[in-house]
Image (cartoon, rainbow, N blue to C red; front, side, top):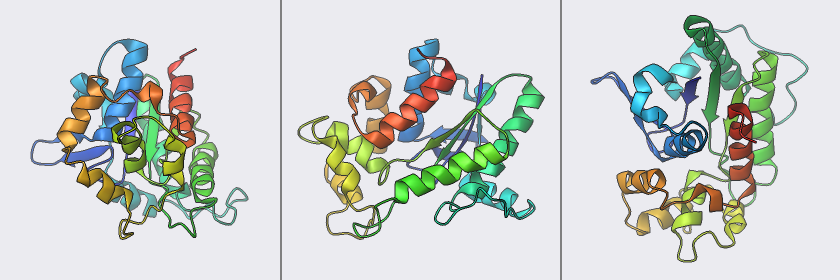
Length: 230
């Protein structure tokens, strides 16, 4: 089983380092890796050159712009935001499956974002747009990884003073980084480096089984389903 991934920035799924020609994982990838490890008892990241294809967001968009415009019935108001991204990633994943002659799971990471006044329904719309994109391309091994409102909320659930308690409230917070009470600022105030957070996920000091948030549970359940978890 091979992974095809695309994220938004260096601090979520990670980045592709052109100098070393390698994928450098971020905290959201380590969550994926931990879920896979629970199934296969190996870290995919240890074998990343053979098991992971990472497509930077800018490259995914560039490829998507070369595709014919899609105007089908599955595009509904508010649901076209990431549809082309998902179609493009699905095409890449299907091509990799043919090249490798093995199953491929594609994960598309996007933050839900939004402000307190716009966040209602935004997660659902973005989720649906990705699911529709995978469906249009007839690709049934795609996963939408959409933290609500953004990845900092998932991490703060574990790292806040009362770890794993009342985490659903974090999902109703603003995803605007310019907000005076932004999730990004709150995480930065904890003075924990990205590398430290990655290590905490790897060694289960951040216990993904205890993160009780609808957006996280959706992602975890979907990935587990594709991995064949019972």
